[in-house]
Length: 355
Image (cartoon, rainbow, N blue to C red; front, side):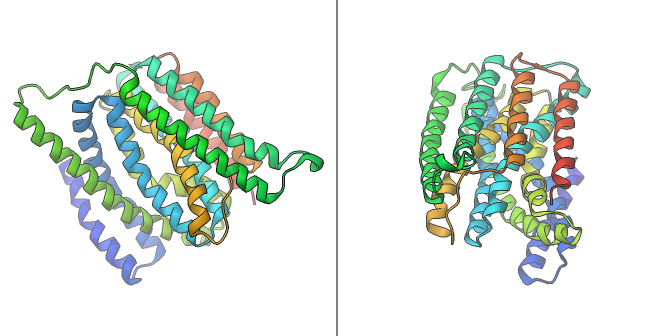
């Protein structure tokens, strides 16, 4: 495991190659991905330490927030360049990827190692119902936009509708944060590592938080290099913009966060793993997407709406449906993970054939 951290030397080399334009797209893509692996290990260890003081719910929420910071920045840059369809596809793909790919991989590999893993069913049910509500809300602008011609709102009204939906979702996200932090009793709050003095515990917490912030900043820069190299590489392979936005950009852009969720599942900390995976999907739906909608009014050549195409809507609905079914009982095993991964693979095949 310790030799894994030797790959950290690739991070500054990758950034130099990308900044100077001396490396090929394929080289930068491969080196960025390899650099993110040890950073994910650092992020995972720091998350576990923080969760020991704050509880798994807040620890997972903190990891998801820092992980989505990279995606928010990358999408904002894409908006400035006018890549509206890629941004919307990336939003849908991030939700689908977190619910199916990340959660599925965590349940699969964790189940293979430990058999049946348990987590808080009440927390999982709350997250699942909130995610289902968020997906229904995200479908509303498309329902009006694709309605009958005589009752269809104008393009400007659809944008205004999307702005209103964005504001409501941000308010809902604030309520979700209040409920997560203060709404329920968390028996894990205030736990510290045994045999540590308060001073040692305080020092360990600050070191962990510093590692969280530092590794997240490094991941932000490397993710931008990774995604920047991904699109021209994928286009050279003949992949469509929709496939790139829905399947590739969310996976490789958040590869570090994905690895952390699997890493903690392999340590039998399934509640923290679910908090990272589902919490990240919730943040995309309730915060990142609405912020991008409102931000596009100021930084993009064209405002973005929340009208997803029929392929994206079908994938979102199917993903949240199966995620609710597998998470409400408070237990998971490898076959449930295999189910989530199977649906993700089928969706990937379907999006591959969309021109």
